[in-house]
Image (tube, rainbow, N blue to C red; front, top):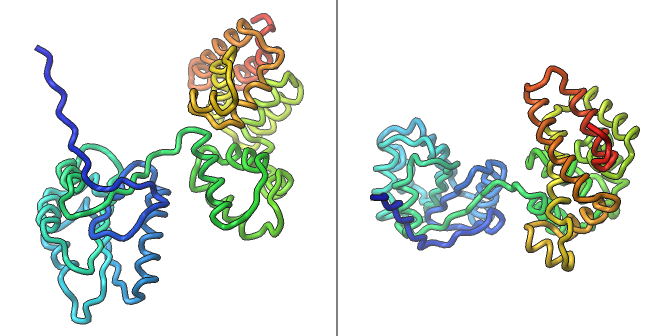
Length: 340
């Protein structure tokens, strides 16, 4: 007889995105994206500090928690200052932390804000279920990984729009492509442009500040190869490798581009309709459609097959990963028509 999967705990508290964080007696900050979690917690602290500069901030390491720590920090002080208690590494918490936090949630202290940072995993599930079930009257700030290009583009867009700054779509694409592998680096790049660039931020601005990063970016190599410029793609590849680029992300960039092209090959509809259907941004649909010019299904299929072989090659299946990359670029530049 098949066993029943355990029922999921009903969520009885508001679940908000990182940028919608607000004060609550208990704030569960969940999810694997540490950068967004850190920013949300910092925003909450700044909000509470603005409301009352006497805010007392204390930290707890839930992974090495000793009995009595939470009760001590949450006890009323002589001057009754508001308190913010930040509990980190709840995903590694001790049994004492679970037991004492559950007891605390039954009657949270006045003027105290308990922040629980849980990065993922099953440890502490009983505590998370209790918070999500409404014990303590809290909220949850969900900090999931931004995996899709469209999510990273939205993030960068908000970085500029929240400061009332204009940035062209081309500059946004160049910036998010250059820092696609690290959200913290992308945010830092946005902040530098916001601080230093005085006019509208264009592709030229991004090139000025991050020319080395953009020019040798894996997506730039893929774009040039897909457009059929074999020699230029090889030169850029060799420059990227000489600058310390890893072959694996380069193959990943080709995979991202070619798979998006494969999704849209033969698809009909407006950019907005297809973007919604495939989980893309409209500009990605437009770009993929342009990239598909000159390609046929057979060539696209051959290129994707070779892509899988190249991925294995750069991860150890072949002795010469550079040769494997150059071979892939040759086939892709010929739009899959070059004999293998």
